[in-house]
Length: 119
Image 1 (cartoon, helix red, strand yellow):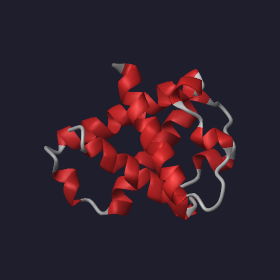
Image 2 (cartoon, rainbow, N blue to C red):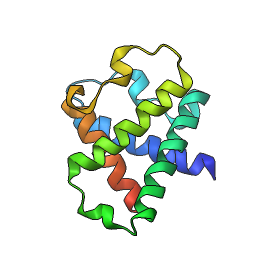
Image 3 (cartoon, helix red, strand yellow):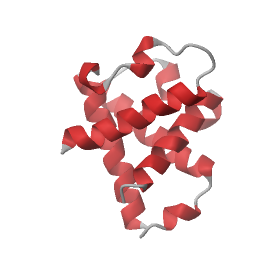
Image 4 (cartoon, rainbow, N blue to C red):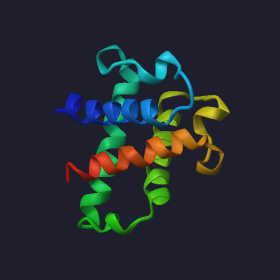
């Protein structure tokens, strides 16, 4: 089951990058699930679970959030995972929402909305 949840997250990420990234995305951005590093698989599963739990805990009231609020939640959960897996991450890995590029914001929003479909 972990692979399924993490895979949903990763596939939503790849779909968002493919749709929103300007130009040719870096290969690491679109690496298939089976080639994704273990830490990233763990992180993807954890963030999926956090978003899923948030939606369930609100009894679906997250549908009333703005798109930016949904994306911010995904981004913040991801930052938590980065700090978990990297004691001294690059600043760009833990950038706040306002500092993220538009393509990444749009991708994070898409991820939240994809997880909403599973609840």
